[in-house]
Length: 202
Image (cartoon, rainbow, N blue to C red):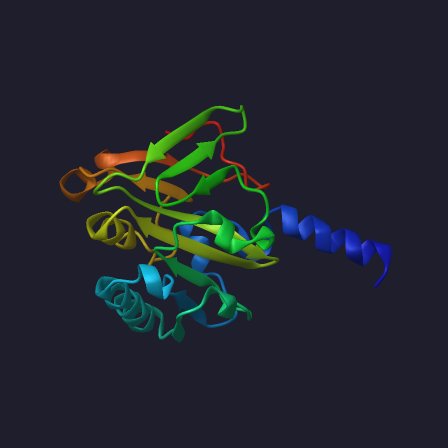
């Protein structure tokens, strides 16, 4: 592999390009089938499987798209894009996900914009989040997570099913989102070309 080819591979790992571009609906730009990944067995609840089946059914209904529901994050290989259901540890995604200014675990979601401003959102009852994450050149994942079932279901309702619908690439929902809609969002923002959160996030 020549030095130019190696340079191109490194650039594509760090910057958004091609089918990664766009807001949440960038997830729909794929040449392969979709993969829906359930959380680890120790953390899995019956509603995780229910949501995975519902999302798979919607993708088939709206796009006649095939999707696999898998039980292990290691099976995220291939050409298609991925939905991660309630996987609440950014470290589980590995370095292939590149260095984003966003981290999350069972207790909180931490975001930092391009100016260095840091905000932390505790994973309290009713809190949910949905956002894009890179998987390598031309592929993305959507992370759908919640502090509990209510938060997860609220975030899952934002999985894009229509192209061209204006959605940011990161949405964190508070417990009031169930009846306030978008006004119940704690944060919304867009990732820039280097997967960093723009300084205009809420």
